[in-house]
Length: 452
Image 1 (cartoon, rainbow, N blue to C red):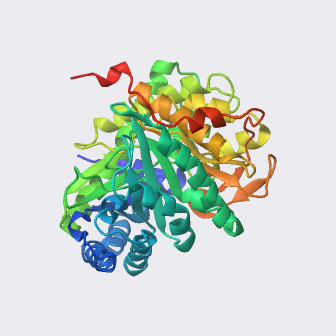
Image 2 (image 1 turned 120 degrees about the vertical axis):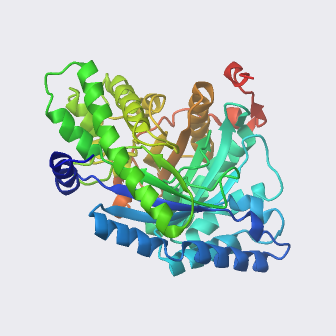
């Protein structure tokens, strides 16, 4: 039972420590919207999304006002559109426009699911949709895209890896007049989860119910504040403090998810435990690592500190909720984290160190701005390296890099809002991986895939 101390502690977390529900995301299956006529399919998609999610924003705001808990985003994820496009043919961008109409009507922040799952190869509709991603992101403002190119079970589809390097670069070129925003809404995954509520990687997996509500919590500022109170503690005590804090944060997510599920009349899916930072002061994962004793995020010791944080968040959160899923851990998006922005500007945080950190955290190279001259094959090689980390370690890894067209190292891109701003990070362009990327085929699955 809650006592006055618990209530006041939660109020303080919200008012002083940037605690919030980062997103309530409704997942909607579009499998019953397939049609041989693409225009009919688009109409079915629009109608179903509006029917299922018509009250999502209103109910989210009602819960926010009644409980005093900030809910920053109300979002929708849908079945990977490549699966729907397979039955209709035609220009896949029409689906993106239908999703944008639905986003405008429902008032949600984003719809995720302009996606394809090609970890074992291309099926009908996949390649056409992937090649259409740059144009789809160019002509829409609230649509997010993702492509899963590998998994521990299947290995890495290197043909898809090669294609995605070109797609990311083209998306940057088409949106160069808008700070290259296109690639900021595009994620390339290995081991993509089917129930992720966070953008840009959210899609509604085929194993999910027809409609479901997921919640993504946040709270880096709360964890940092808790660690400030134990400046001399050893790592065992630090881990316990993070676990207790993650438990409290996740209980709030469970409350919001259960209430949203009841009011919307759809099943409650999962709470994603991920600590999702923002550019706001006091809402940074990097600052948590520095609170453990690092002078600045990115120096030696950063990977170990992040491993402790990620593990403790999972252990604390899983005790607080009946259903945990998504990514669940700590995010390290450079442009969205005030501490990482500072470390990258000063050169303390390099892309090589970020790659090492991705082996122990929840995602991968996220919101990393790279020089505009970066060739497509180098982007593909970055994707391949991250996918290999995910495949071998049986974890989700992802790449969301933004080539800053016309800009070089030392300059910045400013996306605004939660996407923040990012310094252009130095990457190795001295030699080319083109021959490696051009080989194509599939990197075989590792031994740990044989678990049956």
